[in-house]
Image 1 (tube, rainbow, N blue to C red):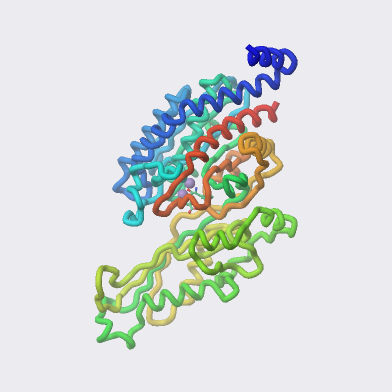
Image 2: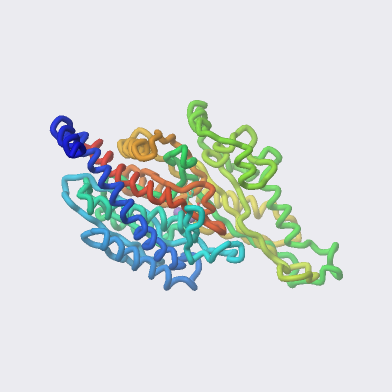
Length: 479
Ligand code: BES
Ligand code: MN
Ligand code: MN
């Protein structure tokens, strides 16, 4: 009785506050009451091995698209469709409640990275389990878990009568292979994708105690090289010491790509790198960083990188070059004595504003061929790439994201620059001229792309609440 009386008094004297409290209560209650089902549904999606990079999984990629489409309809979208591309399809859905209200465009991806090496997983990658309040499965964080939060946020807002605007979903199946077919799709469907903000949950926060909003992503140039020595594999005793070994040579060439100051040696590589002001650098370094924890988490004794820059700067605002895979010769069990004919490597370069991935791929190719010693032949091919992107911190959309985190995590988020890449972000900004907000909820320790990828149940649930709060603030700020 007393409770109702109090509610009545608040309702009469402070109706806005009443609605705020009631909406929030109903949203958190709805999420709490449906938590188990939300997780069960996510698990069903995680059981589908939608690996976009491997043809063997093409049917599973399609199946994941079908499931996502079905879930969008169940959540309350007016329409959902699977749109074919030259590669894996895009799922598009929308709910338009009033043409005069803002429209939020949600982007995410339902494809995942290959789960290899399988033997390093503690439980099978496509049989999700919860351990220590974390969901373990390939794609749990990147990006099925984070993408699914948006579908459940929509369901929650519809069921609690709190959906304040229109929403469109564009969920793709080729993010992990460079989104090559999404570029043409975006260009041809500008009308369909029109909206007031593009909302993406596919990045990380600093920690659960330090929420943050990603405002920068690096670009990418991904190369593959082949070094050929003799015309056939040779006996490493009969020929060893007398014939150039392509693996030895490849290793030397690769190690010459970074000098003793941690700088990449490709001529022209840094020409377009934007140097940040000391204020901007201070902002980046404001994020709490504990070197000892960083090292002990990875069980490494020292960290490396470009001289004169901190760890956050090295991954956020400076480029990097890394070998992602290297092979050749005999790698099977036991020992086989062989001097191989060929050596291979896959090399990625992470790029920052204002580097251009096509230009960098060209510089790499030219340089790599130039440093090949006589006696070997070098082939270089360029795989997918993407431009770096920086998002605004002075937009209404950023403010809405900041308010949403402040409400639901009880702490104002700080802006950060993440080291990963989402190539489509630069294209969205360029083609659609719409602000992008990277409202991610992962942690760097979630092991995305690695064995034992996981995602906190807390992050999944809290993220759904934060997304609903973003909608509320975004619409309020746009009034
Ligand atoms: N979600 C990641 C990108 C990411 C991860 C951004 C963590 C910020 C923090 C995305 O799925 C991804 O892995 N992108 C690829 C690029 C793609 C072209 C293969 C990447 O960064 O390697
Ligand atoms: Mn991702
Ligand atoms: Mn990824």
